Image (cartoon, one colour):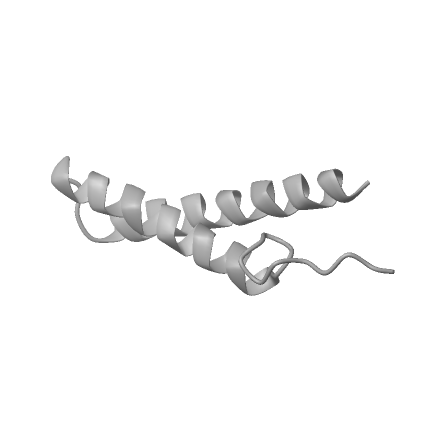
Length: 65
């Protein structure tokens, strides 16, 4: 028997991407309230989303072992 992953788990790539985008948007919005504009907010969003995705993916792979 194999254990089926929940569709809400981080085993699905789409869920990890959605989580990374949500975290990136949240921190980008916080940067906006702090007075940062334009390119800085886009850079913060991209960096935070990328780092979030990598961390969640690594966490998922280490938990599988």
